[in-house]
Length: 229
Image (tube, rainbow, N blue to C red; front, top):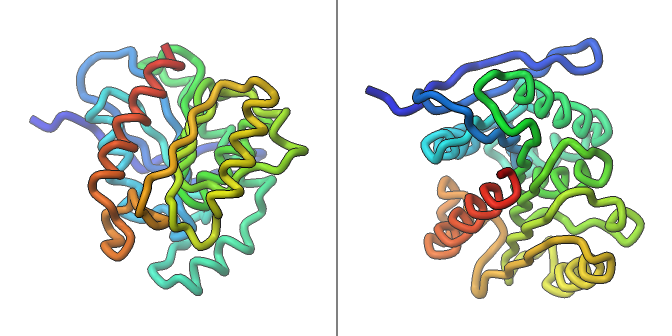
């Protein structure tokens, strides 16, 4: 017998629909809900597998497809998809995904977790600066927010970063951490020594780091369980 169920769903947002991938345990709830935000590759099998991992850990996990069916395995094409993404619309679609989870009978409490990777990590941080729908946020190597947006953050932040990230410097991460401390926002920032961007993505062997990925996963589950109740 399988320990989880998955669905391809449609999420309503501003009169439109968004494809999504939903995974949840087979056993009776209630279960905590978490929205997962893709890397710049799109809603690829790696993100779907992470949703299933969350379900096996007792969560109802929903990954909205912010590219609406488009995806890429090539960095140049993925970069173009990310650059053309309407961030304001994406944030509204992330909030719509949280609303979808709230309306599910097996999801409780009715405040959500939010986890994103790479582009999705940055979007997760941005979303919590403009929405009170989330009670805990985990950003894997997501671009830190600037000083204008940090005071708007409305949820505890767990930031998981690589030491050798060519796009996000340790200095920028430390500045972000200082700003979180300045505004007394609940947070934990971890920088994994010797790692590269995408250290959690086991479909990218050139960057994947097993030790860091395992530790980051354990921290993510603990963070969500702590703040989602």
